[in-house]
Image 1 (tube, rainbow, N blue to C red):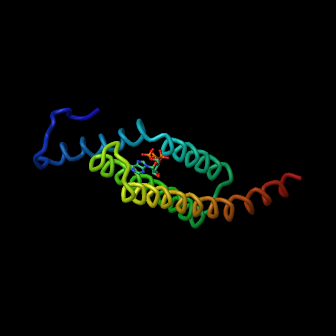
Image 2: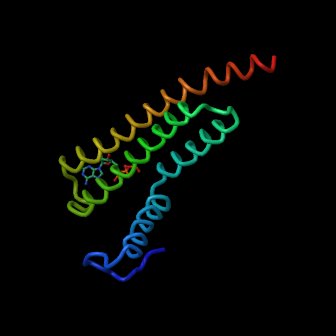
Image 3: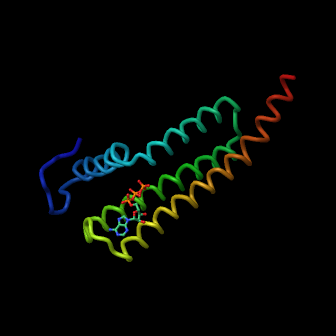
Length: 133
Ligand SMILES: Nc1ncnc2c1ncn2[C@@H]1O[C@H](COP(=O)(O)OP(=O)(O)OP(=O)(O)O)[C@@H](O)[C@H]1O
């Protein structure tokens, strides 16, 4: 994936911008283990949502929860890349703080997603099993 042209100047057209943006998404999926785990959990939530026939309101919350985690993962990856670019493999208290705070952001986002998932799926599952009992 990607143009692989060591380009450092601005993108010339929309297609070039799109290819570089897709390169970024590919990089996230191929290099970030936690991002892949979150995508798998998001896919499970979507399949369960279809199975439980969630309302539009519930889908809005589930979508928000998924995107909050994705955005947090993206920001975490950006912070890690920039910190590594600046300090490399040298220990630095500032580098530790930046990476730990970025990881903390992902944790907070994941907790938000778990709360939303429980609030939506637990009552839906209880209702579903009552119907079939
Ligand atoms: N240059 C550094 N200076 C100080 N501490 C560092 C440095 N690089 C990493 N660390 C510490 O090591 C931890 C792990 O760093 P790493 O670069 O492996 O992030 P990383 O977390 O890949 O995380 P994950 O894959 O879990 O999102 C950081 O949270 C930080 O506490």
